[in-house]
Image (cartoon, rainbow, N blue to C red; front, side, top):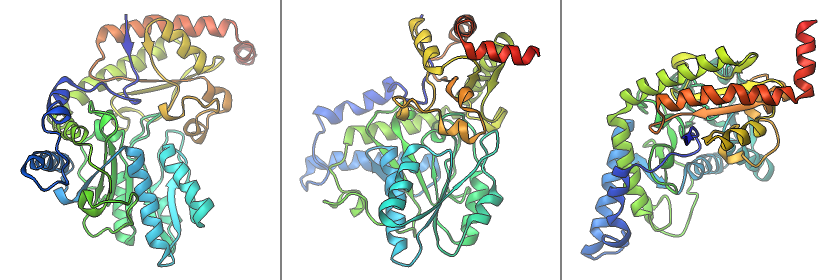
Length: 395
């Protein structure tokens, strides 16, 4: 049996999305920047997609800008905001310790090469950032608050609306990385006081290589990519027409089935969590519970085993999972997210993330629950760390 449970890393492009994209590879291939009538089809397709994305977020069409990825959107926000703010004497960025590396590495770049001051807020044992911590971190030099909507590793959903309200009160721009959240949650940028928001199509059954930035009207940041007048002179580069069309279609489909997907995924998520807790002793669920967790996210730590070893064993059984963020899969360091939650290194190293989606079936859940306990038990039998742990428990 083949079981794909790494939907947080990427999702398959849905057949409906692929069908919508196909004409823009070879039939309606005109450059949207050209003036002749043939290119108007490309321009119209882009604007239709812009409207589809805007409607899903309760945004205005003029507030949506297409990018090459969610990572690019994150870079644009941080660099564009700080570069402009520094001219006015503000150089302070507030973010958290559990952000995606697209935020953390960009913050470090700004700190190292541009003299930015960065506050990395802590989180509690479930991964929640405190609104009061945000309030206390704000200074007269604060140029931007950037806090992810939901964590990609442990699924914890942050109090975005409350943080947004605080930032609006303090007249500080608020950005949220919603690359994971947008695929599973109903987001209203107006009601949630969001000024800027990053997304990526391939997390929601759209194509890879296209993202989007919501930029609220009145929020002015410097451009990130220069060289042309595309995207209303804000993002140079010939548009990825097929990708943008796919993004719009994926967003519209997602919105139409959001409640059903959430109900189905939550039930399967909870069944897999309950089964692991029942069948595997000393398994620790990481992140929040219930409706404060992304409906498709399951993250466990298993004392006495290495997560990478478990991945190889699962792969041999046809099961695709991960140990954390796909963007850092080649790193041997323990997850910065799990360490921020207070896990010790040996527990953080023994973590697994399963993320379910439209491909997931009840039979696949059962298969994982059949295979995983035996794998963990066999690996623990060979582990000195597990032996030492058992001795400690028995004593």
